[in-house]
Amino acid sequence: MTGADAEVAAYIGRWRPSPVSPRAAALARDVVGQAALQGRERAKNLLWAAGKLAGYAIGLGLDLAPEVVLHPPAAERFTRCAAGLSPAARRTLRTNLRFTGRRVVPQLYPADLPLPRERSKKPYSPAQIDGYLALADAQPTMDRRMRAAGLVCLGAGAGLIRGDPRDVRGIDVACRSGGVMVTVRGARPRAVPVLARYQDRLLAAARFAGTARPAGPPRHSPDTRHPARSPSAELPNSARNRQATGRPG
Image (cartoon, rainbow, N blue to C red; front, side):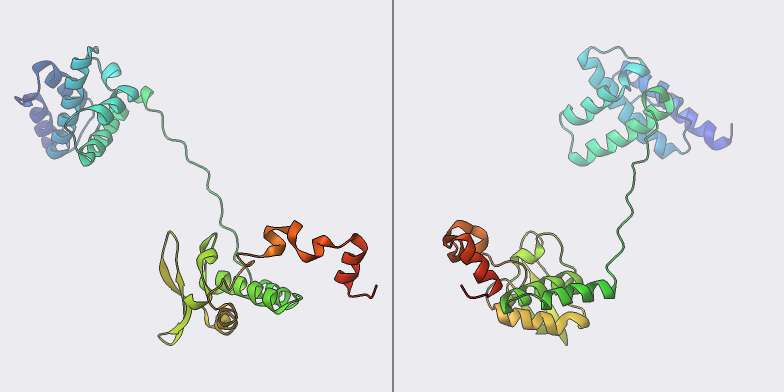
């Protein structure tokens, strides 16, 4: 045993604070002495945590044995339910008690298993994005072409994901600071820049949309919200086929 270890062991042996009962202090000295600590300050923090836990266990009528007091459910109940502790103190006590428990009763604290990690998907290549833009250009109407291109540009050019494009309006896309910025609303409001490659197409989609959404389906599309009320739904099958193909009746 080195001189520093002897000093820590002597400090642990002398630890008898007045706010902690003699029985609780004895258990704290016992378990912290088994933890093989380095440093007096570390020992002091663990002694206070173990002493508070032992005092709480005495009030519940628990047996003052390390395997009982340091059992994970008992320590967790103390850190969650003990009165007069701030949130920061509860977190510190939980960390110190788990450290002591892993050193003294390791059979009750199995090692944490690593959680599986998923590899992130590869980003779209420029050729793939060009394909999506070509698909947008092939849409049958100007409205659909602009909205499809706007969706691609908001995702690939501004990095908007999930529900972010849903709250963007045409007026939220503006030229600023020598580039194009998109003001994102919703749960995470922010302003994001647009890559130069997508600026012209996104600006065109935004001008076309105005105060409406420049990406995705329109908010009040009669054909998507109420298909039974759309004009083509009132036609018989043969008439709908002729309307879709453009052939005369």
